[in-house]
Length: 250
Image (cartoon, rainbow, N blue to C red; front, side, top):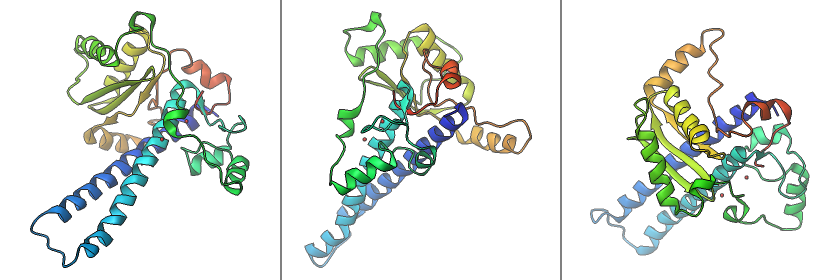
């Protein structure tokens, strides 16, 4: 799988994740309205009939987000697109249809016939490698040190940047003004601080997105090269030398 294919699938995952989060937030708002004293339902059973679909969708949304996050983690670790059952590469068409899938078509059919299920996403996550100088430190302290390092660089605005660390993998969330800021952050984390597994879920502000859409219509200015992750050990060369699957993925 080539670099552009990986980046295309990354963008699909991030966009889907954002869409699911928005849906869950809307459902939460709807639930809040049902709880308002001003809303009176004649019977408790009537209220329950309305609330149940919201609860179900909310839970499904959480599961889907976990699956998407697992796929993004596997991308950063270089193991994306590998079937968790047989170990073969998952067909590109299947990944394009379900980019967070964890099984190839054949294994998915076998699991369905045998009524089997994969381990929970938390159990499937492979740990990343924390640089030696941070080994043994609590996650919260490592994240604090990362913020301190980024704030020393005047090119970066960290106000809307959210950083977390789980199992040696850095997760970047929030919004930035432009791609250049994101590139600086990824470079600092990977080259200056030594982190090798970074999941990039950062969104670029609307103004930048509108500019990208305008530029997208100009020949030769394709913006597809947005980074889905920055792994120092498998960056450019890895895309050129191996057929790639997202996780080396709720």
